[in-house]
Amino acid sequence: MFAPTQVENCTQPPVFSLWYESGNNYVLPRDRGFKFSGNAWLKTRLCSGGLIKITADGELAGSEHPRLIVAFDNNVILNSAFDQQRTIQLLIPRAGYLYIAYFNDYYLADIRIVNLAKIQLKAPNCRGFQNVSIPKESGGTWFPKIHAASLVKPPPMILTPCDAGELTLKVRGQEANAIFPVLVIKQNEKVIKTIFTGSGWEDLNLQVAATPITIAVSNPYNETLADRNLNVRRIEFIPRQP
Image (tube, rainbow, N blue to C red; front, side, top):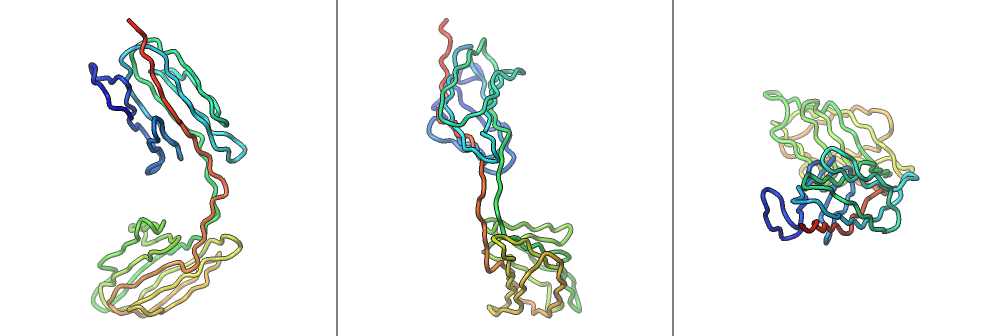
Protein backbone atom coordinates (compact mmCIF):
# COMPACT_ATOMS: atom_id res chain seq x y z
CA MET A 1 0.00 0.00 0.00
CA PHE A 2 2.90 2.39 0.72
CA ALA A 3 6.61 2.25 -0.05
CA PRO A 4 7.74 0.67 3.22
CA THR A 5 10.78 1.09 5.42
CA GLN A 6 11.65 -2.28 6.97
CA VAL A 7 12.06 -2.22 10.77
CA GLU A 8 12.64 -5.58 12.50
CA ASN A 9 10.00 -7.67 10.67
CA CYS A 10 7.53 -4.80 10.59
CA THR A 11 7.10 -1.80 8.30
CA GLN A 12 6.65 1.90 8.85
CA PRO A 13 4.37 3.05 7.32
CA PRO A 14 2.51 -0.27 7.74
CA VAL A 15 1.87 -2.43 4.68
CA PHE A 16 -1.25 -4.61 4.72
CA SER A 17 -1.26 -8.08 3.22
CA LEU A 18 -4.24 -10.26 2.36
CA TRP A 19 -4.86 -12.81 5.11
CA TYR A 20 -8.18 -14.23 3.88
CA GLU A 21 -10.81 -13.63 1.20
CA SER A 22 -13.88 -15.72 0.36
CA GLY A 23 -13.43 -15.30 -3.42
CA ASN A 24 -11.01 -14.01 -6.03
CA ASN A 25 -10.40 -10.24 -6.04
CA TYR A 26 -12.91 -9.59 -3.25
CA VAL A 27 -10.57 -6.98 -1.79
CA LEU A 28 -8.58 -4.61 -3.99
CA PRO A 29 -6.22 -1.69 -3.22
CA ARG A 30 -7.70 1.75 -3.87
CA ASP A 31 -5.45 4.81 -3.54
CA ARG A 32 -4.52 4.76 0.18
CA GLY A 33 -7.16 2.23 1.16
CA PHE A 34 -9.07 -0.82 -0.05
CA LYS A 35 -12.41 -1.78 -1.56
CA PHE A 36 -14.05 -4.84 0.01
CA SER A 37 -16.62 -6.42 -2.31
CA GLY A 38 -16.71 -9.70 -0.37
CA ASN A 39 -15.76 -11.16 2.99
CA ALA A 40 -12.04 -10.71 3.63
CA TRP A 41 -9.47 -9.54 6.11
CA LEU A 42 -6.08 -7.84 5.93
CA LYS A 43 -3.13 -8.07 8.28
CA THR A 44 -0.11 -5.95 9.13
CA ARG A 45 2.50 -5.80 11.88
CA LEU A 46 2.93 -2.46 13.61
CA CYS A 47 6.38 -1.48 14.80
CA SER A 48 5.09 0.48 17.79
CA GLY A 49 2.00 1.79 19.49
CA GLY A 50 0.32 4.89 18.14
CA LEU A 51 -2.86 6.20 16.55
CA ILE A 52 -4.56 4.64 13.54
CA LYS A 53 -7.04 6.63 11.47
CA ILE A 54 -9.42 4.87 9.09
CA THR A 55 -11.75 6.70 6.71
CA ALA A 56 -14.52 4.52 5.27
CA ASP A 57 -18.04 4.44 3.89
CA GLY A 58 -20.42 1.70 2.82
CA GLU A 59 -23.09 0.64 0.35
CA LEU A 60 -26.42 -0.44 1.83
CA ALA A 61 -27.91 -3.79 0.76
CA GLY A 62 -30.32 -6.22 2.38
CA SER A 63 -31.45 -3.50 4.84
CA GLU A 64 -28.01 -3.46 6.45
CA HIS A 65 -24.84 -1.41 6.10
CA PRO A 66 -21.38 -3.02 5.86
CA ARG A 67 -19.46 -3.40 9.11
CA LEU A 68 -15.78 -2.66 9.57
CA ILE A 69 -13.99 -4.87 12.08
CA VAL A 70 -10.59 -3.89 13.47
CA ALA A 71 -8.64 -6.23 15.76
CA PHE A 72 -5.32 -5.82 17.51
CA ASP A 73 -3.55 -9.05 18.39
CA ASN A 74 -6.37 -11.16 19.89
CA ASN A 75 -8.81 -8.36 20.72
CA VAL A 76 -11.53 -6.76 18.59
CA ILE A 77 -11.22 -3.00 19.09
CA LEU A 78 -13.88 -1.89 16.58
CA ASN A 79 -17.02 -3.44 15.09
CA SER A 80 -19.01 -0.65 13.48
CA ALA A 81 -21.44 -0.14 10.59
CA PHE A 82 -20.54 2.45 7.95
CA ASP A 83 -22.96 4.31 5.71
CA GLN A 84 -21.80 7.85 4.98
CA GLN A 85 -18.08 8.53 4.92
CA ARG A 86 -16.51 9.09 8.32
CA THR A 87 -13.15 8.74 10.02
CA ILE A 88 -12.51 6.70 13.15
CA GLN A 89 -9.41 6.96 15.36
CA LEU A 90 -8.09 4.11 17.48
CA LEU A 91 -5.26 4.08 20.00
CA ILE A 92 -2.84 1.18 19.61
CA PRO A 93 -1.00 0.46 22.89
CA ARG A 94 2.13 -1.26 21.58
CA ALA A 95 3.75 -3.06 18.66
CA GLY A 96 1.75 -6.01 17.39
CA TYR A 97 -0.54 -7.37 14.69
CA LEU A 98 -3.40 -5.29 13.35
CA TYR A 99 -6.28 -6.79 11.35
CA ILE A 100 -8.91 -5.02 9.25
CA ALA A 101 -11.88 -7.14 8.20
CA TYR A 102 -15.27 -7.14 6.49
CA PHE A 103 -17.54 -10.10 7.18
CA ASN A 104 -21.20 -9.17 6.55
CA ASP A 105 -21.17 -9.16 2.76
CA TYR A 106 -24.46 -9.44 0.89
CA TYR A 107 -25.11 -9.94 -2.82
CA LEU A 108 -28.35 -10.67 -4.66
CA ALA A 109 -28.74 -11.06 -8.42
CA ASP A 110 -31.30 -12.24 -10.96
CA ILE A 111 -29.37 -14.63 -13.23
CA ARG A 112 -30.32 -17.09 -15.95
CA ILE A 113 -28.44 -20.34 -15.37
CA VAL A 114 -28.43 -23.65 -17.24
CA ASN A 115 -27.52 -26.78 -15.30
CA LEU A 116 -26.15 -29.77 -17.21
CA ALA A 117 -25.89 -33.22 -15.60
CA LYS A 118 -24.72 -36.72 -16.53
CA ILE A 119 -22.79 -35.45 -19.56
CA GLN A 120 -21.55 -38.58 -21.33
CA LEU A 121 -20.18 -39.61 -24.73
CA LYS A 122 -20.37 -43.20 -25.95
CA ALA A 123 -18.52 -44.19 -29.11
CA PRO A 124 -17.88 -47.67 -30.56
CA ASN A 125 -14.25 -47.72 -29.40
CA CYS A 126 -14.09 -45.18 -26.55
CA ARG A 127 -15.97 -43.32 -23.85
CA GLY A 128 -15.89 -39.69 -22.78
CA PHE A 129 -14.11 -36.60 -24.04
CA GLN A 130 -10.57 -35.69 -25.00
CA ASN A 131 -11.10 -32.30 -23.41
CA VAL A 132 -13.78 -30.23 -21.66
CA SER A 133 -13.37 -26.48 -21.19
CA ILE A 134 -15.47 -23.63 -19.85
CA PRO A 135 -13.89 -20.16 -20.20
CA LYS A 136 -13.61 -18.34 -16.89
CA GLU A 137 -15.26 -15.22 -18.32
CA SER A 138 -18.42 -17.22 -19.10
CA GLY A 139 -19.28 -17.49 -15.40
CA GLY A 140 -19.79 -21.23 -15.79
CA THR A 141 -18.31 -24.16 -13.89
CA TRP A 142 -17.30 -27.70 -14.85
CA PHE A 143 -17.58 -30.47 -12.23
CA PRO A 144 -15.51 -33.32 -13.71
CA LYS A 145 -16.10 -35.85 -10.93
CA ILE A 146 -19.86 -35.85 -11.50
CA HIS A 147 -19.85 -34.95 -15.23
CA ALA A 148 -21.93 -31.82 -14.63
CA ALA A 149 -21.71 -28.13 -15.49
CA SER A 150 -23.42 -24.79 -15.02
CA LEU A 151 -23.57 -22.16 -17.78
CA VAL A 152 -24.39 -18.46 -17.49
CA LYS A 153 -23.25 -16.64 -20.64
CA PRO A 154 -20.93 -16.94 -23.68
CA PRO A 155 -18.18 -17.83 -24.54
CA PRO A 156 -19.41 -21.42 -24.84
CA MET A 157 -18.51 -24.62 -23.11
CA ILE A 158 -16.48 -26.83 -25.46
CA LEU A 159 -16.61 -30.63 -25.48
CA THR A 160 -14.13 -32.55 -27.63
CA PRO A 161 -15.44 -36.12 -28.11
CA CYS A 162 -13.07 -39.08 -28.05
CA ASP A 163 -14.71 -40.09 -31.37
CA ALA A 164 -18.01 -39.87 -33.20
CA GLY A 165 -20.80 -41.32 -31.11
CA GLU A 166 -23.78 -40.63 -28.87
CA LEU A 167 -23.87 -37.57 -26.58
CA THR A 168 -26.29 -37.82 -23.66
CA LEU A 169 -27.01 -35.29 -20.94
CA LYS A 170 -29.73 -33.82 -18.75
CA VAL A 171 -30.64 -30.11 -18.90
CA ARG A 172 -32.66 -27.71 -16.77
CA GLY A 173 -32.82 -23.93 -16.44
CA GLN A 174 -33.17 -21.21 -13.84
CA GLU A 175 -35.30 -18.31 -15.03
CA ALA A 176 -34.49 -14.62 -14.66
CA ASN A 177 -36.63 -11.63 -15.62
CA ALA A 178 -39.47 -14.18 -15.98
CA ILE A 179 -37.75 -15.97 -18.90
CA PHE A 180 -35.91 -19.29 -18.88
CA PRO A 181 -32.53 -19.63 -20.62
CA VAL A 182 -32.24 -20.98 -24.16
CA LEU A 183 -29.39 -23.42 -24.76
CA VAL A 184 -27.78 -23.79 -28.19
CA ILE A 185 -25.58 -26.76 -29.09
CA LYS A 186 -23.38 -26.47 -32.20
CA GLN A 187 -20.94 -28.67 -34.07
CA ASN A 188 -18.97 -27.73 -37.18
CA GLU A 189 -20.50 -24.23 -36.91
CA LYS A 190 -24.02 -25.65 -37.33
CA VAL A 191 -26.78 -25.70 -34.73
CA ILE A 192 -27.59 -29.31 -33.93
CA LYS A 193 -30.00 -28.61 -31.05
CA THR A 194 -31.81 -25.66 -29.47
CA ILE A 195 -33.34 -26.26 -26.04
CA PHE A 196 -35.89 -23.99 -24.40
CA THR A 197 -35.17 -24.97 -20.82
CA GLY A 198 -37.60 -25.20 -17.93
CA SER A 199 -37.42 -25.88 -14.21
CA GLY A 200 -37.55 -29.65 -14.73
CA TRP A 201 -34.84 -31.91 -16.11
CA GLU A 202 -34.95 -32.71 -19.84
CA ASP A 203 -33.04 -35.68 -21.27
CA LEU A 204 -31.05 -35.15 -24.47
CA ASN A 205 -29.64 -37.76 -26.82
CA LEU A 206 -27.63 -36.57 -29.83
CA GLN A 207 -25.53 -38.27 -32.48
CA VAL A 208 -22.32 -36.26 -32.84
CA ALA A 209 -19.14 -36.29 -34.93
CA ALA A 210 -15.61 -36.38 -33.50
CA THR A 211 -15.19 -32.60 -33.81
CA PRO A 212 -15.56 -30.12 -30.90
CA ILE A 213 -19.08 -29.37 -29.65
CA THR A 214 -19.99 -25.93 -28.29
CA ILE A 215 -22.77 -25.37 -25.75
CA ALA A 216 -23.88 -21.86 -24.78
CA VAL A 217 -26.74 -19.83 -23.34
CA SER A 218 -28.11 -17.70 -26.20
CA ASN A 219 -30.19 -15.29 -24.08
CA PRO A 220 -28.04 -14.52 -21.02
CA TYR A 221 -29.40 -12.26 -18.30
CA ASN A 222 -27.63 -11.08 -15.15
CA GLU A 223 -28.91 -8.13 -13.15
CA THR A 224 -27.51 -7.17 -9.76
CA LEU A 225 -30.37 -6.48 -7.34
CA ALA A 226 -28.36 -5.72 -4.21
CA ASP A 227 -24.64 -5.48 -3.44
CA ARG A 228 -23.25 -4.52 -0.04
CA ASN A 229 -19.64 -3.26 -0.15
CA LEU A 230 -17.22 -1.56 2.21
CA ASN A 231 -14.98 1.22 0.94
CA VAL A 232 -11.94 1.89 3.12
CA ARG A 233 -10.79 5.18 1.62
CA ARG A 234 -7.72 5.84 3.73
CA ILE A 235 -5.64 4.15 6.41
CA GLU A 236 -3.10 6.23 8.29
CA PHE A 237 -0.94 5.15 11.22
CA ILE A 238 0.81 7.75 13.38
CA PRO A 239 3.48 6.07 15.54
CA ARG A 240 3.80 7.08 19.16
CA GLN A 241 6.85 9.27 19.64
CA PRO A 242 9.58 7.83 21.88
